[in-house]
Length: 119
Image (spheres, rainbow, N blue to C red):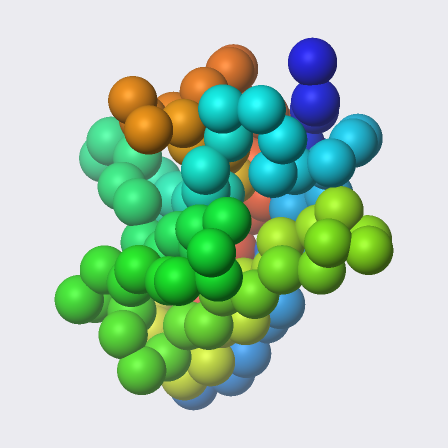
């Protein structure tokens, strides 16, 4: 079972940037895994998918982050990144990464990484 570990969160002022990393213990795109997504859970809210990169390198972004966040991958490093620019206070929360099969998210949730954006 491939494990994912999120890192890179922190405290930043509005307008600032952070780069999150999702490091896998093995090959990310293997078997039934078709994509990796980054999820955002704001305080008191459910987790929401904000960005996803697929095995064919295509990407998806939620409207709330389009033009500000960029998802990328390094197959050599078994890592998926989320570059977050022009951060807003509403981006505050815990960010998680998750592998996806064609049926949806696969496996258990990790610890996530906390992002706090001050106004």
